[in-house]
Length: 300
DNA sequence: GCATGTCAAGTTGTG
DNA sequence: CACAACTTGACATGC
Image (tube, rainbow, N blue to C red):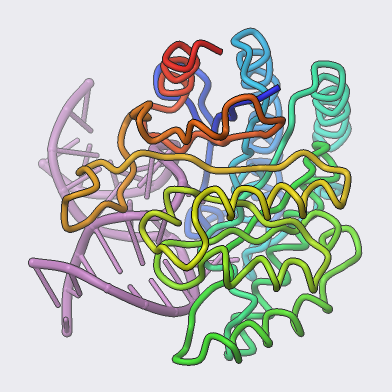
């Protein structure tokens, strides 16, 4: 079965996550801070429940959880742990319900930490912050039952080989739980499938194939080859492959094909993906509307 | 209310 | 050299 996945948020559905900033929090004393953070964390996990109910009702098989679900969890000046929050009990209960619901209904959950997470950086501070953030994502993943923590390989710094070597070295410093969930994804400017498949193989982690990025940054591998090699790697771990799909906002012939369009043009869905046992996250600005539209277009 | 500026963080390519 | 782009705008502030 091919399953489509929804990313993070909704366009039309009244399912909204909440956020705050460190600047706001710093106006309050610690007791007030944890009170506000508690409200936000509880609201956000309850909102995940709404989101999963929606995706289950609409035959959507995967959901990507937005990174700041626990707002400012790793911010150096306001960081906190769930067991500091007044509503920790409720938060933990809702998370248990989320794990149960997604397991019973076979909904895959993933995380995609944002661009500040760079395991290949030559700057020690950057790597330190990355590890801190990835460990937070690991906590989130364990609480919610997410299976994948997916990141990019980072910058080139004029020497991709050296950068990937640093990435592999820094990977060792992650906890076992995070290592078991981490995946690498090809990006649109630096690292293609050909660069990352061997790295993933070395690290014994899966490779998330983003075909839009591959079209922005082609390499010697064809789309079919990248697909096959990614599937082989996922299957070697007994796991279902994860792919990403988006359409270019300005068309493939424009100067900049990178920005994502509101919807997926069915032309951009590779015909050789049909019939495969894979999860395809739909990265489109119209969110749930784009997923439903593609389901109709592909006759799923 | 609504418009506007701000928010922790990295790296690259474009105009 | 400023800014957009990347998985994603939401929130605080000032009128």
